[in-house]
Image 1 (cartoon, rainbow, N blue to C red):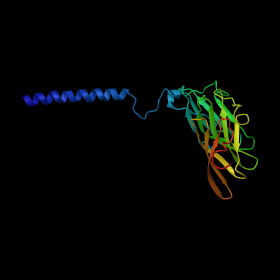
Image 2 (image 1 turned 180 degrees about the vertical axis):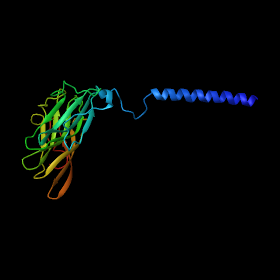
Image 3 (image 1 turned 45 degrees about the horizontal axis):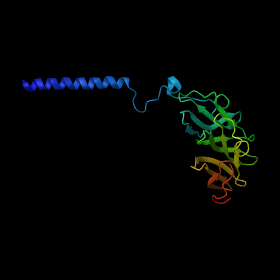
Image 4 (image 1 turned 90 degrees about the vertical axis):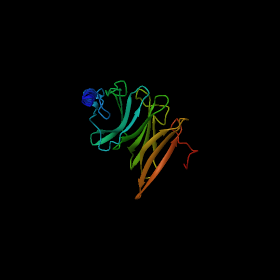
Length: 212
């Protein structure tokens, strides 16, 4: 009889624990669920206009705002683009033109690939732009409001052309001393080369790094 009583109380306790756990789990978000507060109520945001070569770069600002780089459709061509979102997924209207900055080289397809935020809150991104005969690596720096940083390169822009080859900026990183590292791919003459380029904080090529 005593064993029966102990079994009864143990079963009741187990039922209580399982019941509470199930009830709690049903109302609690689980790991891997979409964050419904982002782009509410969907948990994601969409931007119409990505091009077919939208290799997207992403960086987070210290204030939680989200910066992405990509290519934006422009008729039959595309422009390099940078968008900034608030932490809740809404476009930041105080950045560029209603949250969007674009670069159009004027000769064809342009695209932004990778993006970083420097210590001054400026946005630095790399990608490529169509030149007269081939593609050139594109490096651009924007002020926190999305305007070109006139102290960088020419009107905020630096281009790299490896002879008569097509050059595509792929990755970007900032050194502690402010110098900028860019990884790139250069194609032409049935060959493909991997490149690492380093630039001073003002956009000039660092002559102490590598060759040329």
